[in-house]
Length: 250
Image (cartoon, rainbow, N blue to C red; front, side):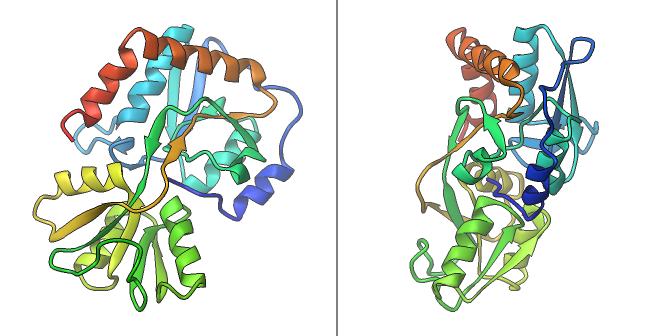
């Protein structure tokens, strides 16, 4: 999903010494809830929902910890973790070498891939043939990163960056952009939630990427606990139940 923003450089500078201590049996988690079906705010209840939300709550149950989740801006996630405001992050964060310089990641818990979303009837089948096209992306995501690379290589006219997936999709609907570069599960979720949208995706267009739970590099003990909890959830079938809840019908 999301790549490093310029604020990551600041985040590295404020990396603190010593591990984050879990307070009063609470696992403090930050997310950015604009990435359905991984994390989003239910319009009726205001509750944080999604695959990631169910998964981290299940991790908390295994560890015997109450899970408190805050929805904050994407660019604030890593700085907040490194400042000790949170114990971990879960937000559809792709594990990349660049990010691993700043934070540790759990074992991968989800495998994803980028796709291209475009208007129905458009003759676009992948990343090839985008010369002269405008790509809409959610800012600071792997879709943004891929589109930027294409634009730098002259294989894309320009990149328009938006705060949310919905805004990027709307740009294509109204003709302000030609395509959206986005994670395939997120594209599926958007299209299922908006069946009247005159859009479709073209399937996988890049190498697979893997999501991980981010932990402060100084908190190796928590990282080991999270990895152990993930292994237990996969072994006892809980992970599969959560996966089927959110992706079984896809």
